[in-house]
Image (tube, helix red, strand yellow):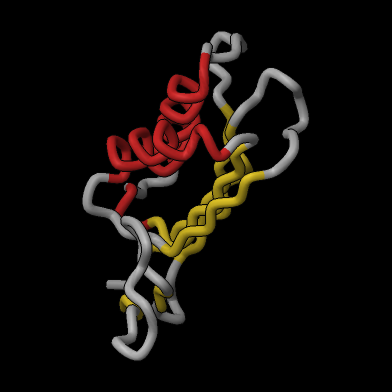
Length: 128
């Protein structure tokens, strides 16, 4: 079971995440490449909320394929192309991650690899 680190000597997390997670030395690690809002048929989901929902659904599917779940996530890094999209991102994150609180970083950047993509999410999971 991962050990959570949210020391009382620093500010509490600003959203639903954990400042740090420590895993056992024998943990099996899974590094998930950046997932975007592309549907299984190759089409791009319409709008940032749908893209965020699809990106998280992709992460969940990859975790399941590896015999893991959202509770095994230890780090999530998310890239948005607009601060206006933070609410839609958080809605999708909360829907898919539930009570999981991985360490998280959210960045707002000027663009992603394709102009129709509004969000990209990469993740790391570990399981003993």
